[in-house]
Image (tube, rainbow over the protein chains, first blue to last red):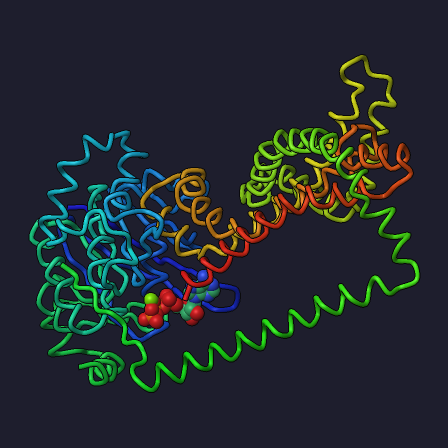
Length: 243
Length: 279
Ligand SMILES: Nc1ncnc2c1ncn2[C@@H]1O[C@H](COP(=O)(O)OP(=O)(O)OP(=O)(O)O)[C@@H](O)[C@H]1O
Ligand SMILES: [Mg+2]
């Protein structure tokens, strides 16, 4: 079976800073892949290249067998299929939670507010935010904002969801509520790539864990393989620091 | 439900101490203001030329005779202001957006917008009014296209739109690039991103700065008098010659202040409110 997403030899540099040095990664439909690695190892950059927020310098990114990294290709249709949730939430501060969620479906799918009312309300209810729909981002806690950001990405019904350390800006007591949401999303079988520092969470939910080290995927495997029997010395070092 | 908790206020002797402090500074401020006013009222009339100045600048009779005419002429200032303002807003916005264009194919538009703002911000307003207000009617255009109202207003519009464009552009740049990333990552087009995400935030941020430009525009409308329209400043000049007295200028000044002081206060209030919100 061809993977839903396939990256081959993806290279990316910012000036002299060679950030991605040949990434090879296959993600099957419905799979959850966790990216772990030290700060600056290139996790965010990797996710941003998949969402086409950063053009790559070399290599290929195939979505359903189609090269989406083709220069000059319109990024919009691809972005509709691949959602991205950021560490810093990045909600639009001048819009209510509901409007944040509805903006993209309204503009891109031509749906009206009335048509979106029911499905969006269902999403807010599912994530325990039914009473916060009319609130503005600055009236929400960090955990609530991040859940709204996840709802916003889900509302476009993407085939792949990318998460970039979405709990690392949160106070510890708020992390759990966001991770709960992710368990629910995971249960639906959406394909996910997840950069995280939450090793316990990666172990619990991931199908595959990739250890990113200085722009390369140094080691990849099931959570059991990677956490319990890492082959590489650098993986062992990293894990001993974070576990 | 959130319960509102009243912030603690100073109690007992602390409150009394702060009240005393407040009363004392108020007294000092009142006394010093009074002293300055008294000095002016007493000392200025002692100046040797005071009687002459009073006659030619603060002449009650002339004031009463010319004030209604000045008010009437001021309506023209208001009209010029009123039709220039929306055009300035539109042109300023368009130029600001052009300056933000990233697409290489549209680079000429961006270049043009940059040159435009540089040129019109780099020239004295009065010079632009002279060049356009006299230059274009000089082409011998048929009526009504030879009207100094139109071309004088155009000069004001061009200058102020350049300033407004620059203010809006700084507002656009003040929006963190993560907002753009977030909008694009959802699949929004670049123009939707600008229209629904960046601009609404940017414009809100620059309301106070634009209010200051509005106040400045109210005053600069008077500059059009140099190319023809009989607005308040020119009307005052006519009265000055007629009565050989400067009081009409004082009347005109009062009329301007009646509009610009509240507007300035309002701009300050907005600025203050913004700053409080940002904390
Ligand atoms: N837009 C950019 N311009 C220049 N350099 C960048 C840019 N984005 C990332 N970098 C650089 O790329 C490298 C990898 O950054 P990246 O954000 O991908 O790391 P990360 O693994 O996500 O780290 P963290 O865990 O701190 O989020 C860093 O050295 C960073 O400075
Ligand atoms: Mg990162």
